[in-house]
Amino acid sequence: MAVRNQSGVSLTPDDLNDLDKQIVEYLATEGRASPTLFMRAEDIDTSRQWVSSRFTRLAEHEHIRDLHDTGIYELVEDPRDHGDTDE
Image (cartoon, rainbow, N blue to C red; front, side, top):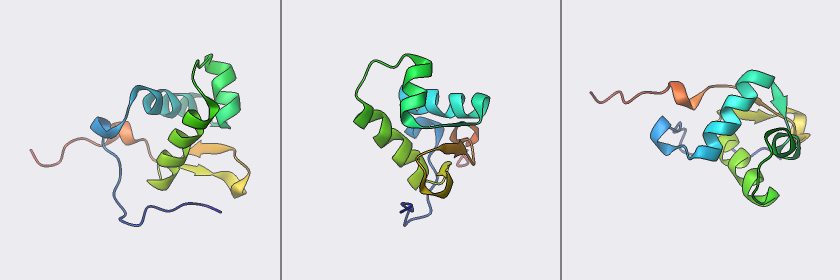
């Protein structure tokens, strides 16, 4: 079941941690990945649960999507492109 962002708020570049940025970059370059594939390809040295939670957070804010609830994600909208619009 897909998780949706109730508020409709997108993440800004300042909302992203280093792992989020690495996930987005990987998906932008490679197209699709599961958290496990991403961890293996990028030699990530952290828990799979933490990586999965970052994928989920990006999906909640509709920057990535879980294709047909398979656990394979693709980039929808790059949050790194969102600048501060208050200036």
